[in-house]
Image (cartoon, rainbow, N blue to C red; front, side):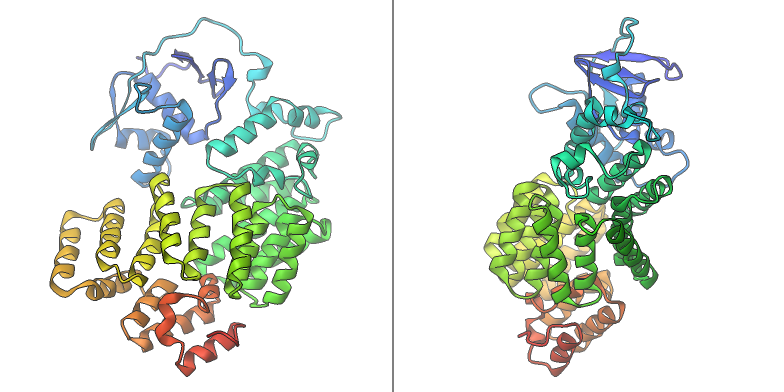
Length: 488
């Protein structure tokens, strides 16, 4: 098939329209991200032939350095969108170590025009507030497409329910901006923030900034900017990011005092950076009262209550978040609360469920390791770490060396290797050093985290791996400093 030709293709019940950038199934749009669409076009144009990974990456990401994992995730997204399964419904074949092959029969469709209902969402929403134009976009098929896009991407329905100032279904149909283009940029930013893949936070920030540029009175866009900036702070440690996040929150609340998204981010900043958990709870409670169906507000409240040792209330709030949006992120968050409340068996059940369904295993692996360690199940803790290494692309020699260390010197020596690998900057190595009895190293990390106001320091009062430190005067001084004077 001529890979340079630009036209439409049909395979099974699908029609792929290159010029319109549409994938249709029985005439209905199937939502795809731009990169997923590009990968699909490339595979379909070369149907029946092997397309090497390197060629796909160079074609779809020509001006960027991307990891092979980006392509793997995109293929996974395509298979899910196409409905590929293990019962013979197969579209994309993996050629081990080489690349991929599109195996469904492809044909050119007859020359039939694309109907209005098949028009892309990019053409559906008016860029300016022309009378009736933007409302037609939100009330027609495109709003359904946005909903489906969010669900296919594994994004919570809460994204859409918070587009309006109060998050209700009615508000969703009448967003607080009349600028269709600004609305699209905001929605894309929210999708990226919720997806939480590498690089999404910076891209999300750009989307929110575009929305603000198009509508300076768009409260949700300012709240989104605050969200993205605070996520960036977690990685950068730059207090300037926090300052900008706080300014954006204030702008949003000034424009709309009932903006749930802004109140939730304000709660997060107050709890994890300002260490003012009294004011944080007020903001979270206000958000939940305004919109009881906002999973983000319930989740933020749950983590705050957990940090205060109010475990039953925290789990109740998190269960509400999971009920509203049963995403892997929310389920993993529920597991974290169970771990912090020392219900290790229940936490393990939750994390194992997530690890079976979520290809983004890295974060879950560390929590599984903690649970097994605290249960003194060293063998399973070690096997989780080995699986993490395998999924992270570690070499066979590195894995062999770790296994030899475990067999020769035991789990504690592997823990020391893990701590050295992670560096002295986060809660897990602090917990590891505490478990190994190396208190000075643990306090060095915790003191550094307090100076940086690292967000995960909020778990220090409840983190089980820090138990060996609790009788040390340095621990009590640290807890008083960060707002937990009664921590035991």
